[in-house]
Amino acid sequence: GEDVEQSLFLSVREGDSSVINCTYTDSSSTYLYWYKQEPGAGLQLLTYIFSNMDMKQDQRLTVLLNKKDKHLSLRIADTQTGDSAIYFCAEIFSGGYNKLIFGAGTRLAVHP
Amino acid sequence: DTAVSQTPKYLVTQMGNDKSIKCEQNLGHDTMYWYKQDSKKFLKIMFSYNNKELIINETVPNRFSPKSPDKAHLNLHINSLELGDSAVYFCASSQGQGAYHNQPQHFGDGTRLSIL
Image 1 (cartoon, chains in turn cyan, yellow):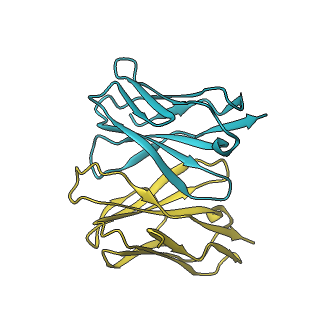
Image 2 (tube, chains in turn green, blue; image 1 turned 135 degrees about the horizontal axis):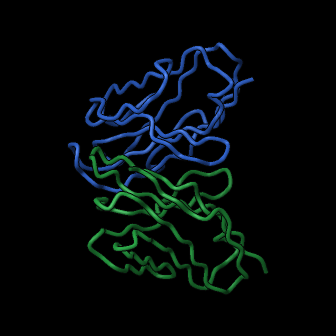
């Protein structure tokens, strides 16, 4: 089936690390993505990971993939107020056509 | 400069009207998409075109008709607008052809459609 789940809210203090979690159901999914949406704005591609990888790091962002548990996480180090946004996890539908299945999004609130 | 651009950014209209949203990408991508984001921020794909050919058509009312005059443009025409059509509509594009390419999708800034 096609289902991606995320917790809806996360609140962190500025300077702390944020960890946003996601679970997906399609074990054949080849790519998993993280997108960021700031208020009133479009979707910004943050990073993505191929299913044969366990980890990917890109500056303050670390993506961890546990394929056995179908669990994906995004860690943001030294979280800043500018990181406040909705973060969407998405998987590629394994049936083809590059169809993205999105989670409901996690609202990250960063407070002083 | 904008890679995927949509017009208009905001669209306010009355129930029953017909409206169009335009999308253009200057990335040289082969595939374009339309997504709908509802009031709860849930995103769902509507259509996808690869080189002007329709390849994804989710369960969308036939009041919605996409048109791709060339591979850099994908427009969305909506007939007889209903209250439930109020949403943010996002256009996206990706490199790669065929049914099984997995290239990342790049999104436009969205068109906020409000039906009165």
